[in-house]
Length: 346
Image (cartoon, rainbow, N blue to C red; front, side):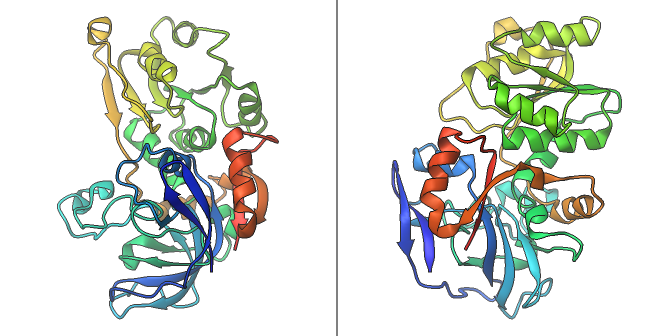
């Protein structure tokens, strides 16, 4: 079968691999029907994910049809369309029982697919802990609508949730890439007074504006986010700031734009260390929330999609066959041709 493989630090490529087999009775074999490319795949290639294993098939953002199940799998059956969770989790350990599935204590727990074990940029994929990892897709939801359920929409849903957004809040999302856009969608579920989008690329701000995902739009190269947030809030600053850009500048802008006592959610993945300037921050009494997404709300997300309240499919700007993945990687990385997200069909 065709696959995209993390071959070594700095290198990915297409390879032929055998169709995987079940290894545990809690496994399922899924035939991939649609998969995507994530910025995290680029982080893996660039050596910014220390736990990533060379030789692993990439891909953690995909959907498919259940082809085979182990004897212990009870929640899904052969022939079902399913969304695949970005994280592998046992559902029984200390962290899983508290909803912190990203920290599952199983050896393959947390973000494993496409990082430490073979993922979904392939024709078939073995899914461990299938009862936790797979969520049936409602008949009314199309493949493209469901594609981002297990990762991108889960990330936005998690970031908005831990941001503790209240009705009437001012929310600033820094970064209008795919993660930031999904975060804006999910933030809207909490009925804030205003969602402000910030990005240094005007094309991405225009995309957010066309999709009506925010009410205010700012380019940090042209304005001070701190000052603009104060203008919106009688001098206070944003109630919640969600940082989805992942640069040193956006990291600093996030805490600066937040009001005293506000919440700053660090959603982005960074390729280098960041520093909190504690003397400058003293007295702002900020709450920082960070970490990998706890992607355990796929059923709720699919229901919101079914009801038309989340529309992640609007992010798909490019479609191609899996055999064309290397060209799509180049377009995605270089942000060419107005790309936002790519849907690959095996």
